[in-house]
Length: 226
Image (cartoon, rainbow, N blue to C red; front, side, top):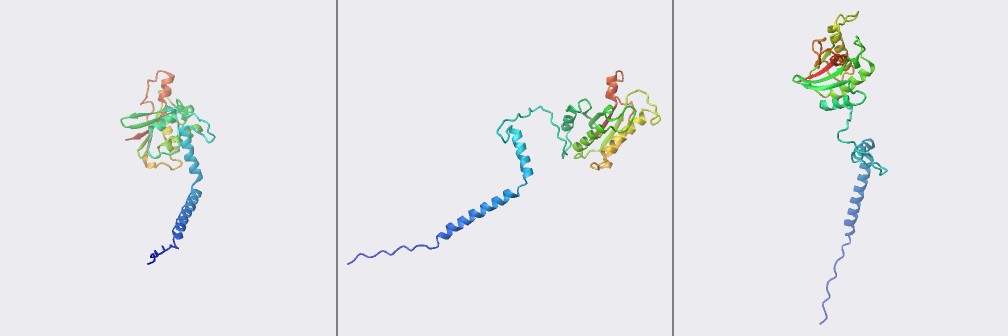
């Protein structure tokens, strides 16, 4: 009796379709990635890379870049969502504005104090051009706040009498009003948040006994009330 012949194994002629489908899927994924990379905002990408490279101190060329020390004063004049007293203080710590102003905490709120000698000429209430730039930066740094803002004019105890202002009371009010008008010029802040006060020489920071102390007392305070 002869040996029984085993049945031949059938060959799947459609097996190539599975491999072809995988290849198509990979090619589709590849083209989607190419399209996505082409659609990336190159400006934002470069900006992000710049922050990353600046933070770790590495440039494209492979050279090291010195990393800023932690206590460096960096002022960023871009609008912020929340009012940051620290950012305002950094602005006053720059060489350009050193000694021109300060910021302090009081029970009624946060006070940004700017020297009147920097804002105005003696006996005047018209803002200097450089003072307008600083007020613009203060607006940028504080426009995210929702506080009521009281702007107060202060003078020293030297008697004031001119054709424009009969006393330090009128001068202090006029100076505070000039600051508010400028801060509202670009309509970035709501007028209903503001009030204007003039205190003359009635609320000095220091005794009016030296030129330095009198200079400290001549100021405009921008108060962010609690």
